[in-house]
Structure formats: C-alpha cells, structure tokens
Amino acid sequence: MRTRNRVAVSALAATLALSGCSDTPAAQDDSTSRAQISPAFDLPEQRAYPEGIAVDARNGDVYVGSFTTGAIYRRPAGRARAEIFLPAGTDGRHTANGLRVDSRGRLWVIDHTTGVTVYDTGTRAPVARFDAPRQDQPFLNDLAFTPDGSAYLTDSVRPVIYRVTPELFDGAAARGGRETLPVYADLTTATTPGNSTPMLLNGIVADPAGRYLLTVDMAGGGLYRVEIADAPGIARVDLRGGDMIDGDGMELLGDTLWVVHNRSNSLSRWSIGANGTTAELRNRLTDEILRIPTTVAHDGDQMLVVSSQFDRGGPMGEGTPVDPFTVFAVRGL
Image (cartoon, rainbow, N blue to C red; front, side, top):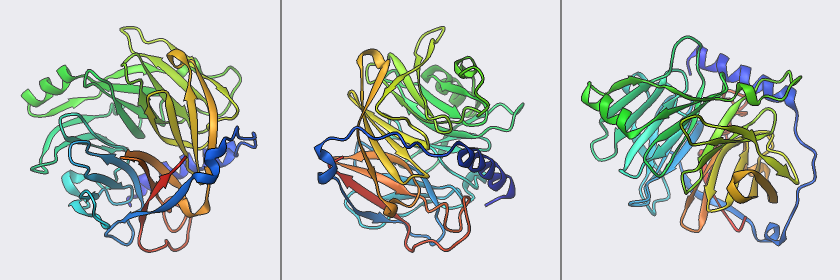
C-alpha cells in the first residue's frame, strides 16, 4: 500500500478511536438466536485486505476489491474461491474500496484517492473514468444507484456527495471516457452545532422509489437523509434504540436497512419509517470472527459480509492476518 493511502486511513482510524463505541442497549428480537455466520468463499491472495463487495444480479457473480493493492476479485456464482479479475495496479490503481454493479452490468470501482472507474465486466476494459476534484485530497468511500441510473458517491474527508447522472456518463463516454465528479450535496450544514468531531461519511444507500438517499456518519453515529431533488434537502434521521457509530457499508431492501459496524465487529438491522425520516433498531449481531467487517451485499437469502482484517497487519494495526481472507455468509439477521 502506498504511503499516502496509509496516512489517509490512519487519520480516519484515529478519529474513530477518539469517537469511541456506543454502549446504548440494542433493541433485540428473536432473530438473534437464528443468526448464523459461515464462510461463503475465500480470496486468492494472502494479503488481500478486502473492503468493497458487489453482486451482479444478472448472473450471481460477486466482486470484491483489495484496499491495499487495488486488485479486484471475482467469485463466479456457486464457487468456493474467488479468482483475480483485475490485478493490482490495473489502470494505475493501487487501492479499491467502494464497488457496485449497475443495472447494465458495469462494475464501478472506487479508488479513494482519485476517483471511480467503470468497467465492462465482459471485456474487463474501462469504459469511463470520473475524477474527484483535486482542491482537497479526497477520500471517496462508497456509492449507490437510484432507479434512474444515477450514481451517488460519498467523501469521508469533505462531507459531500457526488453524482454521476446517465447524461454525464454518456457525455463522458463520447468525449473519451473521462470527466470530473460534480458535487451534488454538501452536508456541512447538517453538522450538530458545537460538535468538534468531523463528519466522516461512509456507506450510502438509495430509497427504492428514488426519493432520497441515506448516508451514515461513522464517527458521530448519525444517519442522514438527502432528498433527491434539484435543491436537495438534508436532515438527520431520528434513530430509535441505538446509534450507527463505526457505521461502514449499508444495504437497503424495501424498508429494512442493514448496517456494518467495522471496529465493533457488528451488523445491525433497522426498520426505516415512512419517507426515510426515522430508523428503529431491530437487531444487532456481534462476533469477533467478522474481523473488522466493512460492507455487506445480499446474495439470495444470505448476506455476504467482507472481513477486512485491517487490524492484522493492514491499515489499522500490526499483526498477521488469518489465511485465507474470507467473505462470510450471514443468515437469519
């Protein structure tokens, strides 16, 4: 991993350490006893330190990105081991975090230091590239799609959300495939007055109806609703029964939101209220075997959870990782 990547992650980790963990009791239901964790598949390289995951809904293939090398792995549907899809250093990328496959089967790969590259999964060739503005060193983190085909990306250094519309994508492709990411929403105004902890945006999901986005502040533990409109309104979601400190990747299906809490080795499930203004904690699962989970994606009736092991010789601590790196399946949460 390059030095500038390690410095950026260390700064984020230090902020998280200062924020501490929540001791708010979780609102539980009877699914706690039914939740099961088992290995889903292994990654092919010894120091993968994975971060992002994406499922191709067309064929069930799963993609995982290495935060420390930029390699992308693909697990063909039904296989017990992934293969190298894009080697480390592809297109000059030495880190990969947020991953998503869009409705047209294109794989979006975030390099948190520079931008996002979009690949044709059939040819493995890049079809477009969107660069982050360079006035501040970015930390692009995660992305989500809305029904109209737009992509929204979070930045963990500046509390902003970028947007790539289908029109911008097509225009970039017509001009050689390269464009700058435009800012869609600035969450600076949503910061609680007097709060000295900087907002660290991470996971992001979109309402299935395309009305709003939800994004988590992993340092402060808040969830924010961003209206999808010409002038997006921004409001803090009313969390009931807990908080989202250490919140990383998220997934929203219908009115159910799953949140990954990285440093606390936890997954939580929330019910989203009408119009996305409230979220009530329904269950939380904590298990050390998850080893700093970073994100989640549903694959059929199971959740696939990335075990990063960042604290075992990776960007969050010294040590030796458990070999092989594994993506876990969680059922019943």
